[in-house]
Length: 281
Image (cartoon, rainbow, N blue to C red; front, side):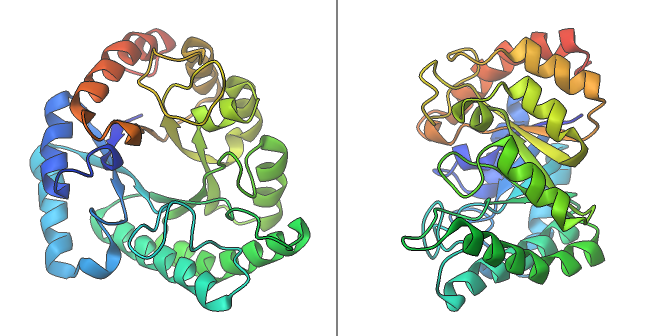
């Protein structure tokens, strides 16, 4: 398992500069934000992608995931979504996902993560939202299969799917091995679940992990590891016992004013626990 750090904590730095900083902290991997001000697909032609790949190699960094969740370039954290009433808005999400799949293939990243639908629009039933989400997935799954890039849905508090009982039947019904789950440990904690138990139940579909801490209030605010209430030894033991073989990325986007300090503090806290669980050398 490669432990990476997401560039969404480094939005005050250019993308390639963030690679240098993440490597100096001691991370072996990097999750890349596929949005402005980082790797927003329309702004990256073949030459710029070659620079990205060269910078990864120079720093000895493996791309652990392409974070294709936000769309600040044309919207916000959640919108445009898979389930908006307007077809042209849904198309923006579909096109962005297709572009991110292509970039993942070009730079050697095995997976991308996408939002779990979106906020339920006013007046739309959950059944209708799920139908729209399935229709969007149908437009991107063939390309993911063609490129052999995993398409990972990330449950998120207050969106269409936030709990095990919501995401499990959705991915199981799709019946496409290329579709899975980006398991954010803190998100399941926020949703009132035990992350260790949720991981065990969802394990067959999990292709990448986000890690951060969350306060005892379960408020959705990513914290430096060790500053919250998540039982990391229990979660990491479950990950090991399940035989998880993919990667994990630290996600600390609230710390844009001090991403290196936040990453260093989290790494110092987590490394002994990872080693004790048998997940790190």
